[in-house]
Image 1 (cartoon, chains in turn purple, blue):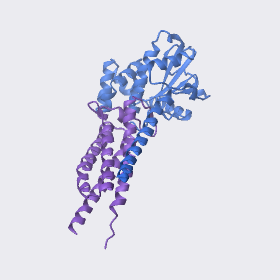
Image 2: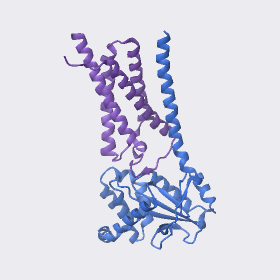
Image 3: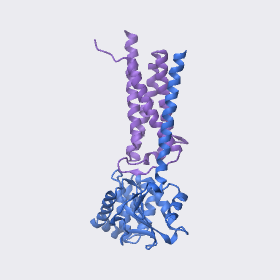
Image 4: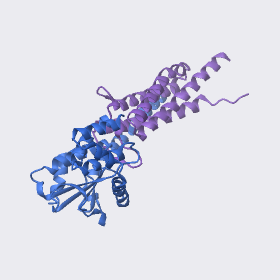
Length: 148
Length: 219
């Protein structure tokens, strides 16, 4: 029989990623509101991304959406640890897939339109992707659990 | 119930702590840039004004500001505007010499080409005009149709377009830009804009008044 990864371990990894993403998004949001003007460095390609018109939707910085997303992920993760209901796993992809697609759109804008590199944005995209993959796996687990 | 309290309490506490640390990190960044005391002294011939430097202000001024900069970087546009204003400042007026040197970052696709246009325009006496136009229109040419925008700016300055075409092909201009870049690298320039005041690397405040005060402190 194929050994399955325990959902608990996955949720812990999931929470670790969410905490990491949360830290990243809070940093970007804090930089946005404190109006710091980052210089462009040789390695990082600078915060041209953070200063572009795509960094906000109206008055809301995109990074704040990241904060909300990671907060909700943390909330889902902790609620699962609390009540252990698989319904949460079924719900997750409804949030993580749109977040992943949005992340792809941002990567596209960053690379092809703004033509600059923002390391924090790439990190966030990787985190979102991993979170999405874990959420899909967890959802898959609920299917096999309910069918067996 | 206690367990639940510990679980959610732990989550909130961890989030608060992370948020606090991250805000501190973000806050710490601009502070670093405004401290004159953090500057390090670089003794080098490279930091002597050269006759072929692009400059604004009095060539015999006591305070020499040498900037390594790039045309595609948004921060450089901002600092470029501050330098323009300060070079016309009544109080600083004759006492500060502002020198521009190229440091086109490799991560920017059009930075070197933009620098080349300023050099070519410079041969026709329009370096600073091209410098200003490139920054003002940065958003336009960064987004594509770069060459067309550069050409339009040159036409706006009523440059001799045939001569400009020839000059853009002139390897000497590219060498000039590259030589600035190499000098900058040797001086340890790792970000743009990068400033040296009287031979010392200085983090310039991103506030016009504070920048002005900093310059006044050298007089």
